[in-house]
Length: 381
Image (cartoon, one colour):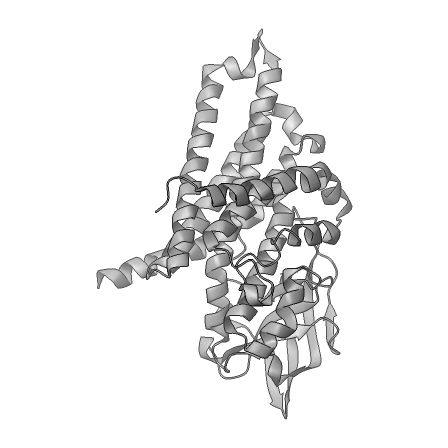
């Protein structure tokens, strides 16, 4: 357990925070309004080592820890949760190649993923299988040295703009044991995309369906053996859940900081807002909940770095708690701004919209409760 950051961790956090303040925050509202995907800025971030945070260094990765990643994604999210979240998804998909790919696969794709010259997307969810991910139906049938794919993935971040898609497909029978993982290049014949979804938030990254119609993918693009794809997908999500919780903390911290600045200037009934005891108590509760969630995310990240037996449960707990707290703090910040909080120019309503989906993706918070309860019950037997 760590209750204070060391010098290296502070330097990593401050590097990401400074980048977010200079390169991301000034443009976040416009990117949201224009539905602009800032690939150029993300590639600048990759130049600082953020494109492959916990990828091994023999292929250009930064070889940092999950703890470091939590610090980085929280800091980036203070500039824009949407941009930070996409970079975290890119890192998750890249890590799956690093962890489960063979040497040829790693050397083929990871150097350009670490620079974000190539962008990666994670493809698990389907129109008929979200929380019940093991029921996915996208089928890959072996035909010589290729698989022929048919099916559709839904709600895929970066779809249509990405270069590589790490896709869970059914190569065998029903259930998790029939699932394999393929890395599919964006120019594959038979691969197409749905329309960019109109969303409540996360507008600075595209979200589309990924459609396979007799798409031929080389067998050599499979990660590991047939039948371990569900294991790969879940392993990726352990880290993804910490990352998205960290993004919630960063967005919420930004909302709290904006509230403190606003309440210092705004007056009502002859006093500044920050002089009212009732509002002071609300600020105290927001900051306390945020710090508790941050400590929990750090603990889960450290457990994942150590490969502790309870790491999956802690990641689920941290994701549930961190994303719930992040949204609630942002929502309280909007309330403290009154009518101005509802206006786009103050940036608070955008944070609220962006953070709401964090309670759904990377496994809904209801599924996080299911994971935790199952682990508890198993441990009590």
